[in-house]
Length: 269
Image 1 (cartoon, one colour):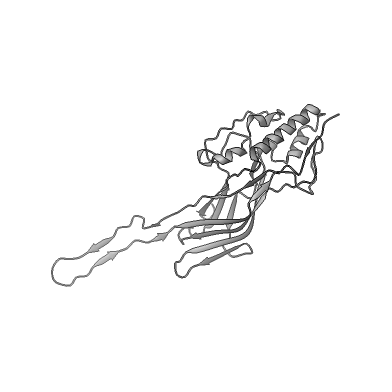
Image 2 (cartoon, rainbow, N blue to C red):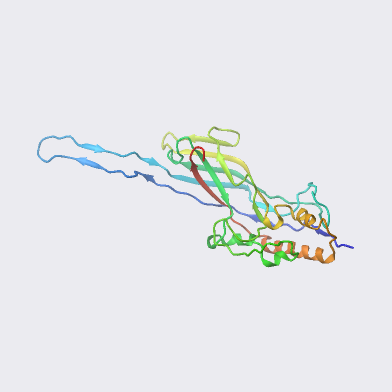
């Protein structure tokens, strides 16, 4: 008889923390030349002064989280699209976080004419983001031999890695385009004193999803779909348990860093 592997509610893998990448631009006089002409002598003379245009392209990005942790587990109340060797009880999974506020303060020249403000999110890897390496699946994570393609856990940086991942950023959460007009989420105001523009978003939900190691599916659906056409045995159940335990060891109680970058996008970009 096949041994059943259960995802228990006591297994909670929590990740917290969001890092912000602040892009700071300078007030520039690009290619400007200060020209002051004056004639010698004791008579009064006119002074010609040419001043180039000043562009304020400064920007400051800040964010606050009201919910900064995720729980890697099956979702309570959800039904499995694939049934079989893995089930779950009392699902407590939650792959979303909530920004109580995202605020971008920027100069009027930061966004090209007719353009928009864009905030992009990444899970970066490499020497500057070593904590995120916990999300890369080690060799112990392929005990079931369900992954035919060879992968390593090496990363040269950025977001491109040659490795399976436990979680990724969900489709639709990779970026936010701040609307040009105020709505229920975003409000934009311009300071009469400084001319700086402030865009403020509140109660914004950000979603993660299961990573490439699980084919973008929940673990239960992933394993059930792979064993759907075969009869799994007790060894298969034990190997699945080892892989899920490997994820727990890698991520339980750890922190990963989500990098946010703000840019001024040209119209049609």
